[in-house]
Length: 274
Image (cartoon, rainbow, N blue to C red; front, side):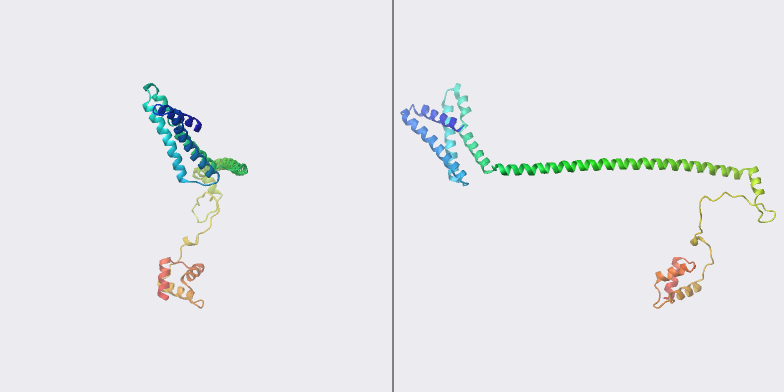
């Protein structure tokens, strides 16, 4: 593109100025324009090869490119109407060539050696391999967890089914026992084999209790302590050790000894004696 733009610029300068001056002079002017542009371009490339950069040289190069483009545009505007479009279509070539050299310089500044490229490719390949292994591991873990949850759900469903059947069977048996207890003939038959507790009183046959039972100490009724007796007990338990027991320790020993009192009364007695 640089060569084509130089040829076009030289041809336009010769054709344009050849009418007003000798063509040899016009050729010198065209060669001077192209030569200046080529010289600045070569010097800029030399600096880039040395890792250096010169802003004035770059500005001069762009000035030569703009001048060449201006010559082509001016010639296109002064040409015949039939050829204006064609000349305008090629008038951008000098600036485009300069822009391509700029892009090429940027590419050279970022170019890497084959060894560095091989290392980069190795790192990228290693990263892709690790990502693929991680994805495979995650998919495997997800499949395993899904299988485990499915097995647990199925096992739970089977257990629930068995429990439902057992509960249904127990409910049926309990219903049968209830009917037997409520039946008049069955009641007399069961009563005849039970011992009389009180004369002339027939004990009622009760259903068996389903499961073991234990008495709840907190629900057993007992004589309520008066405030004076409660104060005496609290004071005795509190002073049973030296130093005196705290409220929590006293309350624990009070209930362990089998005494019964509400938390409000016990705390009030503690405040009175302490």
